[in-house]
Length: 256
Image (tube, rainbow, N blue to C red; front, side):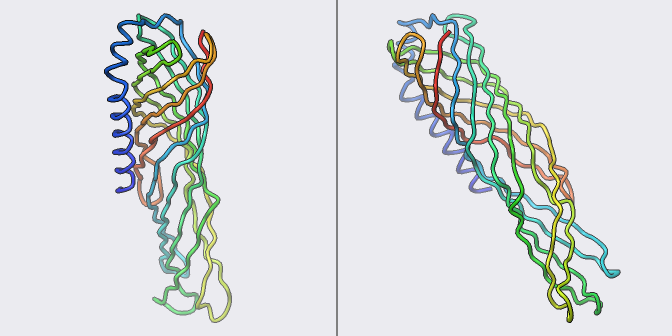
């Protein structure tokens, strides 16, 4: 998927540029100014960028003939929330965790070939756009965090580790023709949806830039790339979709 590849490349480039900008001075600052806090927590509003596209296919017997439907799903990014933190375990190294949650609409375009009630081998075309579907994702990101105080006010935390994703995806369970009436040349469609929940495993890497107003409270911005894949039991066969994406956010930080 071309858009998905662009998102991955942009996320990797953004993290690489950030690491390059802060890398050398951060290394020197980390050597001169050890991180002496016990840990910190953060609460953020975030936005996740990711496009997901996959296809289902359904068949049914109608008027002793086979009706076939192709369902194209598409969903994009969305806003959500993130809460996380880190606890120092050795020098500048901390064990961290972040939990992210967001949801977005999943649009489904249905195109069906529906047999004619009066004539054999004379199918009609029916189309329907379903806008009531949803895609929901909760990510649990385990992290090793290297915390680098650059100044008394600014700290940078680089992180990475495994991720677990819980995904709820709307699928089309059934497509029904809705006859308009004689001469039955046109047909409408209705559809029944079902929510499917699956779990995926992947990874994450990111950076958090923190600005401390005083000894305890501050704010921060983060950029993180998360990735995984999950198999959905879609009609016509399992469909593998990518989960996660490029996440960015801003919020509050509290030291403890």
